[in-house]
Image 1 (cartoon, rainbow, N blue to C red):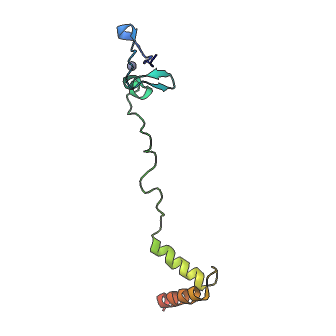
Image 2 (image 1 turned 180 degrees about the vertical axis):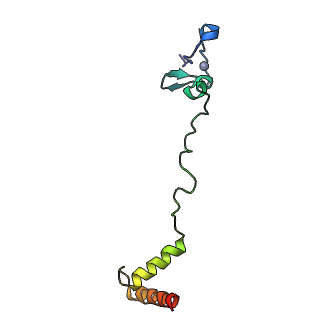
Image 3 (image 1 turned 90 degrees about the vertical axis):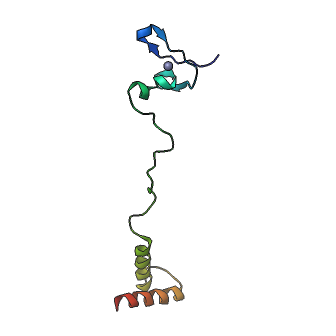
Amino acid sequence: MSARCAHWIGAEQRYCEATEGVRLYLPGLACPLHTPSALAGKPEPQPGKGRLPGAWTTPSPISDSRVHDARAIASGKRRSSPHTYRAAQAAVDHKTN
Ligand SMILES: [Zn+2]
């Protein structure tokens, strides 16, 4: 027994009973023509399109955070190897002079 669209077509005094593409929606089984969205005149919600493009990008450019990092290392607020510390100090000195 296959699923059938349970939408009542009032004008034709019958149930739709379409079997193609029938899925279970909140009100019950419905074919693509009679989904809640279709009946409301809205486009079907598309799965997998909820995330906006660029949602994972950070507001500040990478170069900005690198400069910030170098300053943190040079000031000793950020743990680093002596080599990185000197390189960061040189970078910050170069920028401030
Ligand atoms: Zn239908």
